[in-house]
Length: 332
Ligand code: SAM
Ligand code: SF4
View 1 (cartoon, protein in one colour):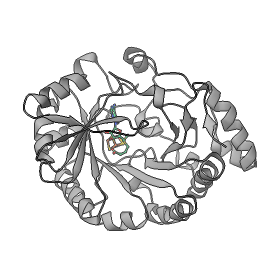
View 2 (cartoon, rainbow, N blue to C red):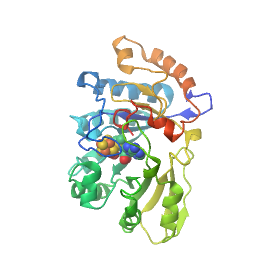
View 3 (cartoon, rainbow, N blue to C red):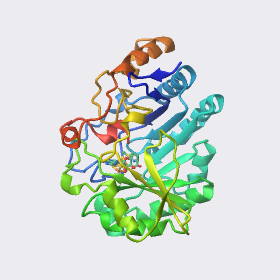
View 4 (tube, rainbow, N blue to C red):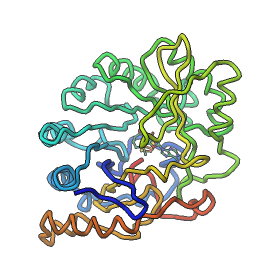
């Protein structure tokens, strides 16, 4: 059985937030002076509950891809042991597993992560300059993250994807440095348009669009478009003579809602039909488990909920007023 919405979009990709806690305070995601709406520990999904959710989606709804995110997924206790349990479901249903991490806890653990069967690794990195890295994240971990990237390439993640959120007058003058960074490395740097959330002071002034970024890169390099899967959100390019690739995630200027195949589960077990939605048809997995719903009953609720998925997310200014929308909790 497939989870299809009223716009005929087949959903087969689940992103699960393992925690809303993070060891960084990125200015665009978890500003230190903001109200974080952190979920209390008791309300966080247990590993057993997450395993059951993954099993339901893989077994009953033909889901093919799972990505772990957060907050910072690797700060959660015993997370590698959890990944080993997920591997059993992966092997049974031939799932593709991925993770998005800030990389700080990856150093010394990349091979261990690879051994858990996670194949798709995205590491966030917004600056190659120590001072700016500190200004953006509130931490001095640049070298630590760079070492984790090298270690991950060595461990065989192919390619390691580097997520850079580009913000005007903050790190946009490093776009070309990031292109040079991938010259001799098997990395895929992804320039991400800054997205508005209730807690990140989004302003049109800080936004730099795909066109602007691409024009800047093309003033110095020749970008060759690569063919990508229809559900892929990134626009991918190669550069002659460069080992790595560059991509753009254009969530704001050219949204990709019409091919969206994703659902999200928040750290406290709520279904999100869209990154920007506010829980319009709130399925609360924790409550369902507590009330002894069977897997089939849960599937039925999901089939009903998917009908409510909107065709596309609203415009940026509207999104900024969704106060309780917070990337940390939903998971990026
Ligand atoms: N802590 C992990 C990390 O930073 O990779 C995983 C969670 S983070 C919320 C997932 C991704 O969302 C990161 O690549 C981050 O850069 C991106 N992100 C967070 N806030 C964003 C925003 N306002 N606009 C665009 N991307 C954002
Ligand atoms: Fe933490 Fe990732 Fe958000 Fe930065 S982007 S604050 S590392 S969750």
